[in-house]
Structures are given as C-alpha cells and as structure tokens.
Amino acid sequence: MTIPTRDECMAILVRVGMARNVVEHVELVEVIASAFAEAIDRRHPGSVDPALVTAGALLHDLGRARTHDITHASVGVEMAEAMDLDPRVVEIIRRHVGAGLEPDDAEALGLPRWDGMPRTLEEKVVCHADTLTGARGRLTLAQVVEDIRAHNAPVWERRAVALHRELGALAGGDLDRIGPRPRRAR
Figure (cartoon, rainbow, N blue to C red):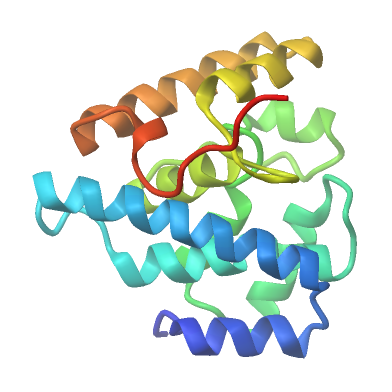
C-alpha cells in the first residue's frame, strides 16, 4: 500500500461528500502539521515522513463525512480500512482525538476500546496540529488549555501540554511560533 498523495486525499474528501467547512479544517491542520514536521526534520533529518503527515492531516477527520460526534474517529477508521488506505494513515485517524485516548478513555466516550494514544512522530504531529486548530483557526497552547479547563478534563490538559513540549523540543522552539500565526483571544 502506498500513502495517498495530497491530490488523492482531496479526491477522497470530494468522493465521500465532505462538507466544505471540514475540508477547510483539515487543510489548516495540514498546514500546521507540515510546519511542525518540517521544523522537526530540519533538526532531525529523516525522522518524520512528510507524505504521511500530509495524508494523515487531510484524512484524520474522514469519519466527519458521516457523523460529527466523537464516533467520527471509529467511523473514519472503518471508512479508511474499507478504502484499503495505508495502515499508517488509518492509525493517524484512530489516534487523533484530543491529545490521545487510552482504552478506558475511548470506551467512556463510546468508541471501541482501543489504544488511541499517538505513538509515532507523524501521529503526534497530526494529533497536536488538530488540537491547536479551533473553529475559527489556529490556537495557542494557552487557548487550548483554557478550553480544556472549561470542560474540566485535567488528564487531557496534561496530555496536550506534554505533547506540545515534546514536539517543541524536537522542533527546537515553541510550537506557538511555528506555522500559521495563532488567532488572538477574544
């Protein structure tokens, strides 16, 4: 299996009838994730696969063609497997929710009891780029933390902060300064 190109990913999104606002979201996630991957690759050449980051970012919300609730992750995995997509892309889809889900977390949210914690660099980059993408654009870690606190989810706060620090250390800087500029707080 090969990783689908950007054009192939966009054709998949059209074929499944993805809503325009979701396409705009995944395109922004792609821009952010690609910027993170490039920064990491500059410091650690060959450590991250840019084609996999692009495909994973564009297809991570594949399940939103059918549902916009939390089960979009499991629906997306089913759709990707039915399309015979590269298993690494499938794992990015599985592991993009929040800052990662342990099996108990996934089950509590109505998802299959699976390991939804991002493990590879590509999974981590796409997951965190998605976390830093809000309804109106790019967010800072502080804005994400504020939102997580409003939902009283301290475990997800710890995971988001840890992922931000890990990827920032690999990229050689604060991720809030890499890629498109975050939007200002209201």
